[in-house]
Image 1 (tube, rainbow, N blue to C red):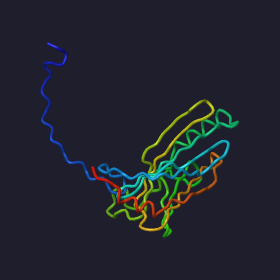
Image 2 (tube, one colour):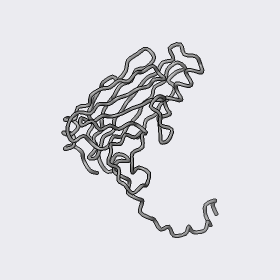
Image 3 (cartoon, rainbow, N blue to C red):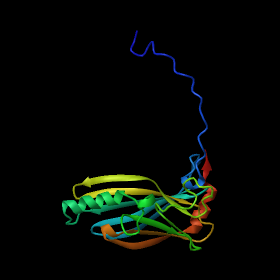
Image 4 (tube, rainbow, N blue to C red):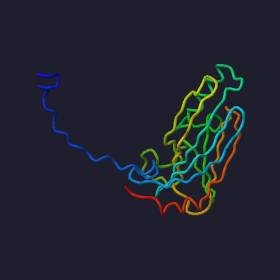
Length: 200
């Protein structure tokens, strides 16, 4: 008899349908998005370079791919460690602060705004539906490339897609010496890309 023989039979498993994920909570799992190349810098300085690589357009929203490289540039060991921890600690929930950490936001052509990690009414099980734009962390990562440099990326989920007009992507990272800066994302290209989104 082998190690795995003679084990008791597992009880019958009755699967329960998973609750439907809200449309604002992330990209649809059953779609192949259209990728739009962006290739624009948000910030360029000796200690920090940050750029927007691309957009993935889905039927309900889009993912924004951002990458950056931070360099130690004379910081003490303590300062360098603090900068790294703040870069990965996106503002979330009750800990949200407009002064610390790496901040991203989106402004629609009609003036509506969404800020990373900023809760919207209806997101936490209340009876009201989420109606205001949502910007969420949807992946990314990175780490020290060398002792004096680290590379990282962030994938942001934006809901909903713009109906018309451009989007303005805004970023700020006071701790890394990056003032508020922004680039414009072409709303017409985003809307046109909808025709190419494919279901699985």
